[in-house]
Length: 98
Image (cartoon, rainbow, N blue to C red):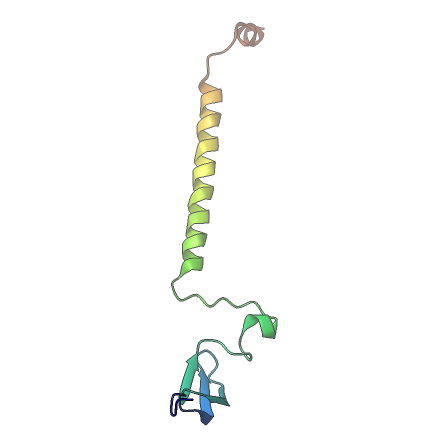
């Protein structure tokens, strides 16, 4: 068996959470670890709904939804104008004269 092929193991490795700042002591091959979310602040474990959005994906999605709503309302307005400005049938013209 080869000697000294295993990485160095640290008994008191420190893990730091970037969201809540919690610090844990664990055993690891790295001396310090930094994580974005931990068990104290992760929505799955806390039961609260919180969005961790670094690229503003949620805002982009909401903007697309608003643009789609405007498109639908404009389309409905165009259809209403078409039906209002459509030529009248002979029956409609006769009913108007009475």
